[in-house]
Image 1: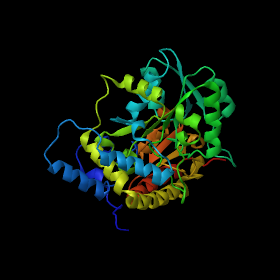
Image 2: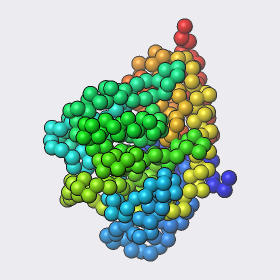
Image 3: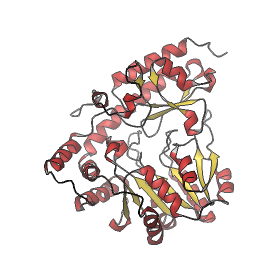
Image 4: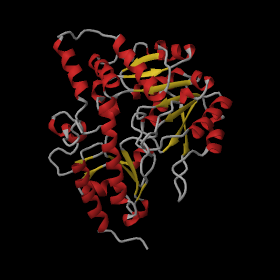
Length: 385
């Protein structure tokens, strides 16, 4: 493999939030959704060239950046995006908050499915909207995490917006066409605007899998959609502050832009550079990354699933493992594993106490050390049955 996925670049810098949480402690940081890998060398080279220019004034998306985004959408999803549909953003979470403000009025309801990435639950409240939560159906012996469509339909009767996480963080599902079409049908009948967070869409782990943007389902789905995307998760450039919304409907796009006025800054100029390089030159690096992530995912399932009542389903997408610890009888699983030397995200923050989220976007040696610590701690618990 021409790229190096064995080095943990993030541990070598002094300003990294992920590892600074445990500074001075023997705890392996596997919580926030930053990978430990160095960003693609093509991205680093583009940034170095931009810095060498010595010009850091106000900037805007370049023709190269827009072309890279549109070209990647055609190449990777078969999605023809018109340039005018793009709205640059300083981050995807900003987009969630802007979307909630752009549709409806204060007091209107915003709907999402839980467990889910915490800003899905905070953005409506920050926007003076009412949050409605529909729990996903938990996996059983035959079926994975999935939508409770009747419950979603019933809740949608009182909502204006649906916040869709696609692929889903934290459960790791890549929603299939049938599931998305069922959601689109509910959105059409209930007249919902669908805000689709697709930031993990380039991290589908099954060989040959291809992301299907919600907006590609039908003309109606496109016209009621705000798709939020960024290079930040896939190419590990979140700190550069650049994302974008894709909004095909002109009226909805203008409402979104009005909600941004005066409060949302421009994307970081180096973020624009990194986005152009990532989408334009990063395909080979991403292909190798997916092989590493797939192996890491499988190692987690092999090491932990069924141990002391713990359950781990293989993620279809993302570099995040969603681990059900309820069967182990752990009241606070995040604290339990932190005491064992592994720092994970607490499922309670996602609306699911008893779970933890593990970031496996790291060198295999780091993951192996973490799994050894976790397995040793679990082996000391009373075995179920």
